[in-house]
Length: 254
Image (cartoon, one colour):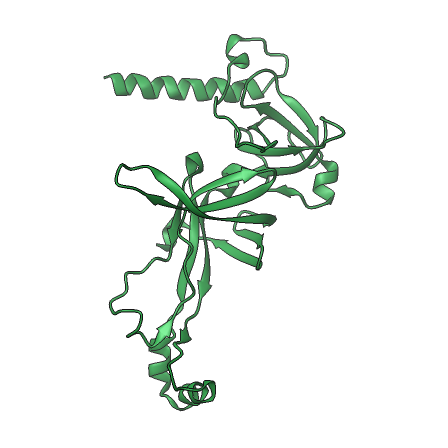
């Protein structure tokens, strides 16, 4: 019974929050309540909140997560500079990088709801280098081996990351090897096992973590990427070593 009451209260709170987006003149008590008390990472000046009714290619109507009345940002410059990632819809969680000189102008807008999902790309293996076997010998093997054998060895794999709620992530593509790495004739690129994600001043930070015996997770490695493109089915990120494109994997594809 308590659980049912909790979920009813949660639904009611969400309904009131979205309703608050509909009118800047609304003075109801719930309009001034915080959507979230979550704090930014140290050094992150990004503003977080919800998209409201009235958003278009030049204007973002935005309800800050700390509560109060909706703000209106001019995003015309960001749109022209291709710095609006996703198409804001009413109730979507948003991340906004505000212009340093004009607090009414957004330099970058990221639709965090559109960012969520399973983002994948395809990788292909390479023949494992063997001691005493030259590159020319490997190339000769590829030319002379039966097509059926090559097809069996060079099976592509789907890699990627699922961006989930509450800044959690899940790696896509991990395979438990049936043989040891040394016994396998091919080698695949190393899979990044991202478990966390954050926005930091308009950048996407993806982190690999390790859980200790007490259940506490510690970040062991992080990669930072610039957004290049975010559409309904396409995500392009620019990492330090180059760009990586992703396609959205739909649930029906599993």
